[in-house]
Image (spheres, rainbow, N blue to C red):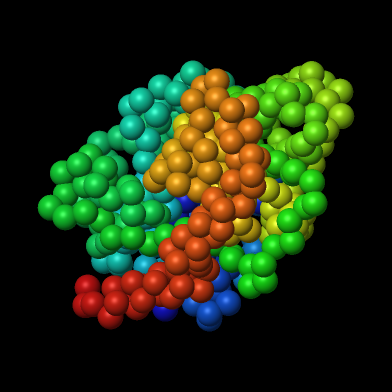
Length: 364
């Protein structure tokens, strides 16, 4: 059996976000289980047209000429084409290989209000956001969703919304995001440690994390990440470099370096300051390390159940509440149990393989 993963990005070049990380994790684990895996994505900066990563083949096409992907999808000759969220790649894979099996996992299916937030906080410029809107949401996407052999969401809370948007007869299934859960209990830092793991793009609002550090000089703050906009990135670092309890760790390739893993194992709390999110992988990974969550967003009620759901001006109040009487520890433990039950890596990969095998056994 051969699987082709279709996505808008792959963790390793240009934008390194949750979609690309989830796709690489899934492809790596499928390859380890002996399933031939190829990934097809729009080409990012410095990305070769063809290469191999973690045992899987990565094929890229020029994003402003998406029709060039038709030949790539035919060349893949896969049994299963699995889209990680919808895009024109989903549509073109179906056109190129109409007799093969096509499934979709919805990861962050943006509503109109979500796109307006993206326009308000563009990663680089608004034109890029508008182009992404056209590429990821158009009338052909609806056609592809209705034609798919299987529809899934990366978490249960998304299923009702997707059913409503596409007027489906039944809700999609669930193929969760795979998360590595440590076998041994994390040894937490003796002193409060709060971390931020995200791109430093405008929508992520990292400056709110940096400002929070100034209010809690007795707490250590550690920020991973960088911005796609170099000028914005440098301005943030210059403005906040004088905060003595704030450390900038930069971008870390989590497939090559365990710095984030080690930091989460010691951290007490993960802070998310985004204006909007789907289901952030960083939150799931933090919970897997028994960190509590302090966040402006409350996807699947993660923040309110396993930490503190902060209003726009409540980050400081939330941090105080979590630090008081070690509330963070109780919240982090509950989050760990939830992630282990629903997102543990081997369990999730088993579910993916079972879906692939069932579809592959069906006659075309």
